Image (cartoon, rainbow over the protein chains, first blue to last red):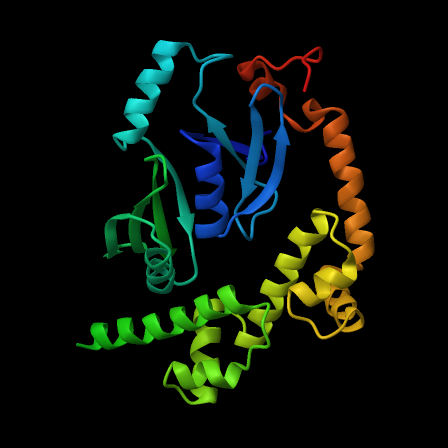
Length: 136
Length: 143
């Protein structure tokens, strides 16, 4: 029986910039930040109130499963905003929206009323988009 | 119109929250923040709590403790951390830290050092194998 999600993966184009975005702008906590040799880095963050869910900020770079062509394709797709990474939730969408805008986060869609609550869409520093929601 | 008024209120409360985020290490007088936000202190505290789930004072304390944890992880001495994040003394810092986290700053620091040593000794112990293989990281890799 599957019980929980413990790790999920967001493909990023620069881990230093992703660290700044997820930690300093979104307020996520660093779970593990370990150098893995030859410039590689294992970097995971957790949502502020969900310390058991590690989000791996996975660098799109040559090596392992990524060859040069895959890196090029992935980079183009991520920059283009192809990938929706997750739905995030908050207690107060309008306040969170104002705060993130103040911190320079780019929104694709301002808050709108939906049947389940409110929703806005923002992009991370690589181009992945997230839904930010407040449920009824 | 009501929506615009609401947004205006939100902006002022968000500014107050960001002020705490940016100035937590200073001797912040929360009455001054309420004044700057053009609220009565009571009204300010109520709105802040509605939005963030805790009073400005509790939020300030939480931000100080969160930042203290980061500094403790970097092996900075407890006394230095206490002043750096805005506490008057290591004694009051230790008491508040223990009340919020359930452990003392020095015990937390020790625990972090042990965890970090374990990761440094073998990073693969904390990485799911599927991810490690994806990167080409194996037990014989030189980290």
